[in-house]
Length: 191
Length: 191
Image (cartoon, rainbow over all chains, first blue to last red; front, top):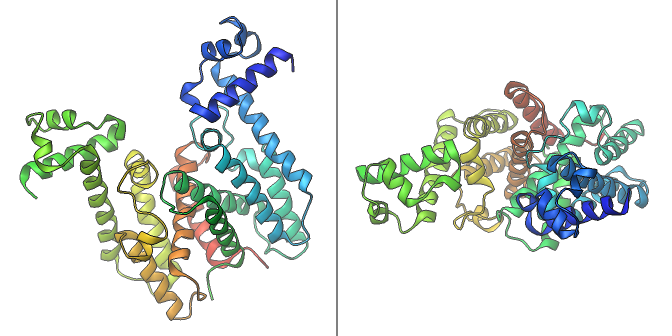
């Protein structure tokens, strides 16, 4: 990536994190980078394309962190470690998280097609861990993409409720609650 | 409730459903009801109090529908029936649902205190069904408030992802997906 392009992506990400997507305009980004008003258009067709580049690099970043941690022996520990990475991200960058995961955006990946086709760097790793756990006999045979969505939706639901003020817990206790919920899905609730 | 008060609540709910909370102002509601600009203040201290009354009546409505359906013999069927009621509501009234469940609002109930104290008409019924299922030995002994949150967060996560365009399924297939997810939590994912 050229130096100007990198600066544009970094400025957009900073603005997304600090003020949310509504604050991002091509004009404002140009001003933040001390470039001419048209300069962002040399690198990105429009605002959507610029925001998409920020999301793509943030998803890649989370996936890379997960890959760096390596695989746990117990698939449950693998899922808890993945949950922690997502929580680190969501708690530190609520506006960026919200834009990546739920704000309407043209390039958003959709369940099931995009995930079954391996288009998500983060969910690919989760699907791989689940497939592995099923192959080893630690997890019940099931559709790994469906199970990945169950886990992702559980964490997303908790994070959205937390960000919306519906969970009256400090971040550390909220993390314990998320772990409890992942374990509950692991074990099920029936006797 | 007085006739004017009922009309004010009904107009607010309609506006919330059609345009979202940002469109609701005391002035606009007065105009919709063909009342003087100050009339809403005779019944509600401010906009927050008016919106709170709409949420309270909507939560009561969902709870009453659930109570009317009666209890299923199998607790899993009970949970699926509850999920269907929530989905009916969320799919028909996405903006109202979003305001009730995640938009920042001063009167929003919080986990765990408000739910453990029985302050939610809807979650009370879910907690009761879970407590009953545990007493009958159909569900594993656990904290019913915690299990209720697991189920509520799962559905909320799926609904938020669906509303945000991350689930590329028509509503009927989305409902099947939600049922699959409730069953997956019921049975767990481990072998």
